[in-house]
Image (cartoon, rainbow, N blue to C red; front, top):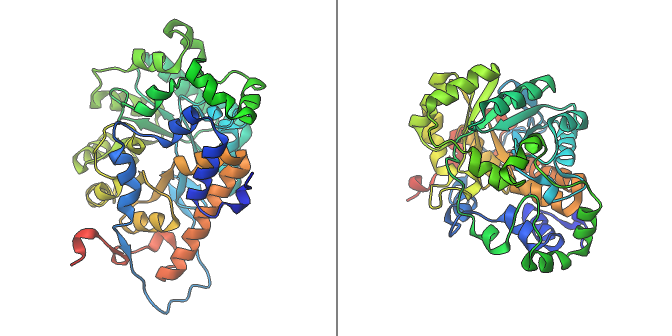
Length: 385
């Protein structure tokens, strides 16, 4: 079987993950909503933005360090919150991703639906950590998780607001995918095709969303049943205000697509605006995040740190996003492919691939500091004749 050392880019890691996971699990990482137009567009649209360069610059010293919402980071790269990471590597999961991030000096974001507890992630890494939440009907549960995160040394909270209902992820429906896994004829056949994965799954503790595990029995024991019961269809901006007050620290709103909503975030006191369309997993045909970034930066970029995720696959993508005004970018699928391919070593490899491409790209555009990337280095599609 191909070693992760022969994976020279994120696309290579994706292929390794595909070989090592049952189809239902790989499709959960890889898939999006409905026809997956936004999923493909997020990555494809980056190719339409061109990079130019400033010639004859001294590039003997290059700095990739930055600070995002008060948290130092060795790269302008954040490991996004993603649910159920032990599904992708049953023995490693969030713990391995957090350890890899900490070793690289990066911020790790733990999902409220993570399969590793807040306290276990704290034990795994001393690096900077943020916690992602939703505003659920059970405000007491949200308050409980915020208090646990604060006690565990998490320094930022990310409120996800682009899930008013669950997206229509048809790959998961075709595959009978659930968390925890449910045995059907289809899932059994897919699992038997990956005996190594099954061995890890059967010899590991039950995969479940650890931070809400005590609430699951009343919802039938499954993550999706819990979510369906907890989504609050009456949510408004006043609930963001409640969350800001409940946390009282660095706070970003994730899932912003318009300058008007970015302005609302900042007006309410958010320190970060996170440009995201949930990786193409919610509203299909929504615009790629790179297309919505610049207007948001022009509106709030001097008052909040703007973060972008969706479609980052190359170091050049990071350069384009930062040159257009983002303070940092988030990655989800790239490091999950690495996790599936090789546990902590795979996550580290994904980070190193992007870090190497970023440093090379900075040298090629003639910029020695990620904090000084200039808008003049990017040619947007509308600017080309």
